[in-house]
Structure formats: structure tokens, C-alpha cells
Image (tube, rainbow, N blue to C red; front, side, top):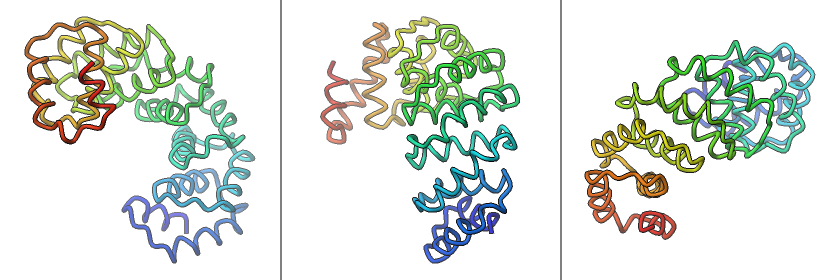
Length: 265
């Protein structure tokens, strides 16, 4: 049954009659679920945006009881699911944070960045987990893909966690992978640097060059955030300024008032 709902979630198929039946059956049989079943169910519900109160409560209780059995991936998936379902106020979250901290050394770069993203999305500031995330990430940043680098930077910036060693290391790692960054990743990375006042000149130079190359791919919000960030960091780059002006004028009718204000500033 769990494998079926997981397959539906993987395929992004939301079949309401089946999902209603699944929620009823899973709630009744939750005591039979192992740790992987619990994690996969939480992930599937989050992907399909199923807010079944009874099943979510049963999942929370069962996960808390069996949390020591959870693998690093199961912990990451469950934290992500809580964030995606906007369930941050559950008592389970702090238990998951403690469990994640204990197993971070076993986590992949994707899992580390996803845990950080989830914490930021929930605005949940767990100091010891954030410290552990940073210390785990720094030695392995060369193994992080571009989206994982920008996501981790964005997460710490969103939480106003100015971990200078981490952000400096992310900056250095990003330079060598700058051509792997797409528009949203560039926008998130430079916004993070500006928000935390991390002025890494070598990184900003290559971000500016990369931005000029792909500026046509920037959505209005990404364009506005990038313009604000470059101005905040006082980057002088004539080609970038001209390109931002040109693309902003071309898509100005798509800008929201806040995006116009940020770009104008």
C-alpha cells in the first residue's frame, strides 16, 4: 500500500478516491509501519499535498516512537515533508532535528542541503543543528552540486545565520562550478551573500559574468533580487548593469510593485 502511494507521488498522480482510502487504511494500520514506511508515507503526502489530520497525527506519533530506527535519508525526507505540509509547530520537529544532528555525518550533500532548506522554509531556528549542518557541509562542499550550494547559502541567509566559514567556503566552491548555475541558483546565491554581507569579490565577479550570459532566463523576482543584491554589495560591473536595465525594461509589465522597488533601488 505504501509503495503504491509512493509511486503515485513519484508520478505526481493525485487520485482522490485512492488517496482517501489510503489515508483511512494507513491511519488504522500505522502500528504495522516500519521506519521506511513512515518516512515514505510522509514524503508522499507532502508531494501530493494531502493534509489528512488523522493520518498526519498518527504518523507524527509513530515517527516519534520509532525515530531511532530512521536512516539519514528517512530523517531528511520526513523533515522535508513537515516543511512542505506546513506542519512546523508539531512537537516531532525538535526530535527530528536531534536525530538529524546525530546522523549528519552519514548524510549526502543533497540530504544536508534539503535539511537546511526545510529548516529555512519553516523559519525554524535550531542552533545546534545549524552549527552541525555547517561543520558537516564545509569539508564536503566540492561534492555539492550547484543547486545544493545555492540552496544551502539561501537557507542560512533566510534564517539570518551568518556563518562566515560556511558562506566563504560555499563562495569558493561556487566559483569552480559557476557554469553549472542557472538563473534561480545565481539569484539565490548573490541574494544570500548580500543579506549576510558576505562580500567575496572573486565570486561576485564570476556571478556577474554568468548573470550576463543567462539574464534572459531570470524571472522578474530573481532579476529584482539580483539587482538589489549587486547594489547592496556595491558591485561595479558595467556589462551587468546594462544587461539588467535592458531586461528589466523588456519585462517591466511582469514586475510586481515590490520587484520594481527593489530593481529601482
